[in-house]
Image (tube, rainbow, N blue to C red):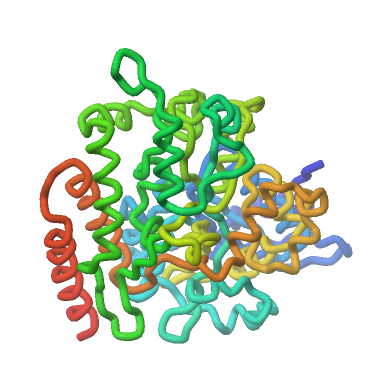
Length: 445
């Protein structure tokens, strides 16, 4: 059973109440398990997820405080990427009143902020907690460092997967045990899965730009496209591989009527709702992160589905994906940097990861911890698929550069233009490339 350990001794509470000694320095005297007194240092922590994730956050905070009685975690729920997306974090940094550590899924923005000096380097603290770079999943190593210094601590690794409805595959005469591996196979199967009534589509086989497919970071890796050359700091968008992604997506819009597709997508239910079109049987295949398994467990527990790697343009690109997940970051001016890093590092232990893994199938960054996971011990096939993808040679991070956030924003805005209009895709990508290269030059000065 989950337990929250409270180590405040009654005498300390009484003394604190009498003296009113809760200082701005956020420390208090408290008894430890051996009967003596230790100085409890506050770790200010901002997290960005509610629901089941928030329950887990609170539980693991209690576990951390129990195992590390010298620390007490002051946690605050801050939506929109722990204040990254809505500007709250930058406002805190500018004011000097910052958390010691944040946890956010805004990886691209976090890396850009690290490159621009918004976070503290943590190499000294990583060494103090016994962090071993040689034991980290190689696919996340690049995310940790910028210019040779460590700024981010990946909390977990999430794989993007192809989900498909096995019952509808059977209905359409497709083998439910043989998902598509290439884009050509995906397109052919998608067409066979389409259902029309009165000449109108009432069930789509696949829509490339919903769920995780909407992210600008997902499809370039599957198409063998590289939008940024990190070795030369060069934006490389205006090339046939990148243009091919949007031409492919546009072909779906033209095939199924752009306006009807736009209306369908704008009215589709969210991933965590029973109205999601995959659950409703209105979309048969979709690309989503491994966490979607939990949504299906909650809202459609009897729905028959399977998961596999995302199809790729060619067979040699198959098996990997752009990985996602959450990262810890340590804002500039953090007072308890070591405590924040201890907290981040503690959450890589198998006993802490296990509940999170059972719900979301998210993986920690140290493969050595996998053997302590219940689903791993049970040889859960969906978890094993996630592990295979996370360690596939074709898996890795999205562009890591100071302009990653701007790249995401511009490609996201460009996507609808590419899909729903007849504008020249290559020319549009060239315009974005020119603008972003100018920003690279500005930041390099």
